[in-house]
Amino acid sequence: MPNSIKDTVKLRDGNQMPVEGFGTYKLADQDSMDAAIKSAYEAGYRLFDTAQFYNNEELLGNSIKKLQINRNEIFITTKIPEPKQGYQSTLDAIDESLAKLQTDYIDLLLVHWPVRSHFFETWRAFEDAKKAGKVKSIGVSNYHQTHLDLLKTKANEMPVVNQIEVHPYLSQKSMLKANEDEGIVTQAWSPMGRGATLNDDTIQEIAKAHGKSSAQIILRWHLQNGVTIIPKSSTPQRVAENADLYDFELSDHEMKLIDDLNQDFRTGDDPEVVYEIEHQYPRHK
Image 1 (cartoon, rainbow, N blue to C red):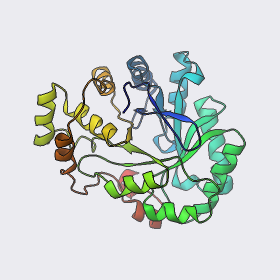
Image 2: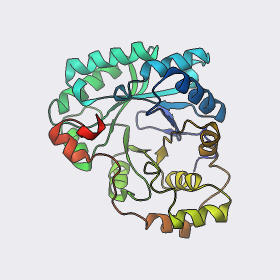
Image 3: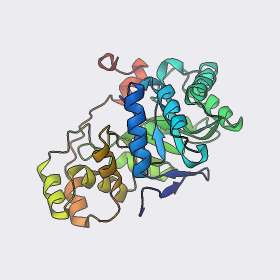
């Protein structure tokens, strides 16, 4: 179990990744990004997660530069969206991300969503970008076991991370096991179900017993399940609170109570649908 937000997990390629990162989704202007990254860095976060789809890579790059953070101190994750997939398109997109982030390399590059077209060509571009030194580690996001099994038929190197929607109402136990069996680290996006789980009676009772917030209980549940996390908040107090997870432990009984809240409830898109229609649902556009 990690003892600090500075703790890391060893990926299958030998690289180290912080167990907890800071998500930047919906940080859409420079002032908001600057304030959020400053708060997160001061709270101990060293992993910063962005994506081309978020349209804020340049903002993040600017914030890091303004704070004069040494590049080797931090871990940057970004993702290639569906329209940019395909061999050459992906290579071009990687160069775009490097320029916007103002960095020579990306620590972790993820395929944002699996799509049927260019499925293997995109991954080949990832492998080649890693060989070229533009990317340290390569992974995927929103992959079901069927997608991992398909990728395995042609990949020279399997993903080190699968970033998926996981929270108490969508515990994804079978997917967590599939990742673990493949040596892939699970990373949770929307670890609190976009807020849907925060007011759950069971979670609130456990929070009261520990003198913690519902968010802290949920994030601790993830960590004790072996899941790495990327919570996001633009409120400095909550940013610090989400980093303060390492001075208490949930009992086996409490873990089971939270496990039993699963409803297979998704707040985001179904990866199988995205794979077929080859884009996130129109409601996200």
